[in-house]
Amino acid sequence: MSSPTSHTADLVVFGGTGDLSMRKLLPALFHSDLEGRLAPETRIVAMSRGGLTDADFRGKVDAEVRAAVPDDGVAWQRFLGRLHHVSVDVGGEDKSGWSTVVRMLAGHEDRDRVFYLASPPMTFGPFCRELQEAGLVTPRSRVVLEKPLGRDLVSAQRINDEVGEIFDERQIFRIDHYLGKETVQNLLVLRFANAFLEPIWNSLWIDHVQITAAETVGTPGRRGYYDHAGALRDMVQNHLLQLLTLVAMEPPARNDRESIRDEKVKVLQSLRPIVGSEVDRFTVRGQYTGEGDMPSYLDEPASTPTTEASRRVETFTAIRAEVKNWRWAGVPFYLRTGKRMPYRRSEIVIQFKDVPHSIFPGGTPNRLVLRLQPEEGIELHIMAKEPGAGETMLKPVPLSLSFGKTFTARVPEAYERLLTDVLAGNPTLFMRRDEVEAAWRWIDPILAAWESSAELPEPYPAGTTGPAGAHELLGRSGRAWHEEEA
Image (tube, rainbow, N blue to C red; front, side, top):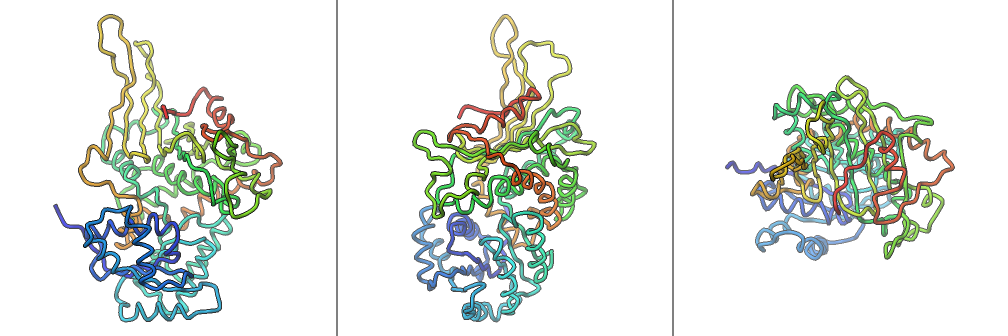
């Protein structure tokens, strides 16, 4: 077994003391360190307005992160030794923090520099400008942008322009953590490394596709953000559309950084626009109400008061999309995401058509289920005969691949794979500018129709599978959402 490749870099995290850094980035970096993917010289520098010393920051990480990762003592102390903190007021009058960063990075201009912006999108442009003014951008620098990239096409283009003034496109890594999940990467292997699926991966054999991202949590403490984002911006524009592109893309000529992204962009450009009155027919938006001990969205604990935006924002959305090309014409893609659902589940369901002529009663169409969470794996549901004498009785049974049970190696978190790719300079699993903007072009007419409508989101009780309109969206064509016992 070959040893892992390590990359020497200075990794600077803006927003390095925030929730994303503590829950995802630092644990992922520790696992990378534990498995030998960080070179001994690699440093991790957190930037924030917190006024912390290095010792303060290491103490915070020790208190908040250590319990969530395996710890043999030696590895953890080595990781803590990589950590530094610098107080910087981006956009403020005091620029003294930047001189500290300059001194810290001086003498290592030949080393890769990764600037990870774990911060709101309106900070991306100012941060990059101040980086340049401080003389910290080198030919070996990269910048990682967290989602959401803007609120619409215009704001996304503005952010891309601002960042693009400082960094070349090859240096910009727009991250979507769903693309780092093992199941998502296995989708490409499943399609393009196995001969039996590709001939039936089209409208002749597939009836429809469902892509679901369901969460049991609500938005406690996050309503200020969610009032201005909503499920469509927060989940559909990035996560769900990214999954759709991987399902629908044509086979790339090569497994390289641009061939895959080229094919994904073509899918987004082939999406049939949903405009005008079609928005009411092909989209559903909902907001959860209180049920039992679960509060409504409007009653969630929040640091901001309830506003008209709070009443109009969607915590659930379902969309019927179509890819207008030869492979997929006539195949609906149903996208669904929601808060306060009865289960936490992210999955892709490929529903095949029924057999042309059934000689057995009671059969149901085959389906392929790719589970992203909570337990990553793949299931192919086929029809089998139940054991017993007498009449043939059919039963759908799964051929199951559980990554956790099949492979002895630990299944890494999505951010581990993506951070490794950033350090290696591999942008394959990151979004290109034209990809982000193509997604917004499709989303914008839906947003515009919702914002101009007098209708409020359809209510649904917390802990249920969403508003009635979501079930009617499929029911009108005799279909139903793929549900399992919670």
